[in-house]
Length: 212
Image (cartoon, rainbow, N blue to C red; front, top):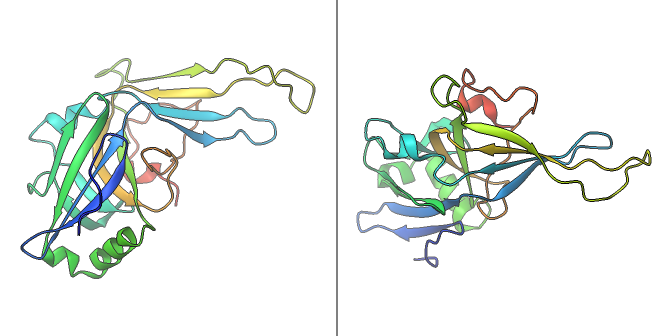
């Protein structure tokens, strides 16, 4: 059964393969904003945006492997670039991918569960696992800017400060995951922890960058 078509606006598509496997396709749109924190009662909101072609380095390097996972769990691998079961096409608007999930994987407990949740529309988000390269390699891989004030007044009668916006311009993509709870509405991507005071992520393993 085929669900619609894959576009650069996000979403997932399931297709039954002749060998009994599943082909799953989707995309992660660039340039979309996610609200990582609303700032609470006294803090500043935090937003994030992934710039166009931010993931191109590892996507386009044939020597670099990228995995397709369930919930950022390397014990639940559905496909990988290194085995030829995950193909990706990087465009200015989005990262478009297709995963060929073998029959053997669809018959595992996690494979059956993941595909059942996708088919039911319960897990249709795509979330990237990445880290920012060291500054010595890419000096301007990310930056933080301030959103213009909106003119509103806070509870203390002071002008409400605009959100802090983190722009990721270059990142090392290690995996894409099927997730349940999206933060980027268009890409249906899961939010991750981020502190604007500690933007350097070079030593942080990608699996430690996600909230449970």
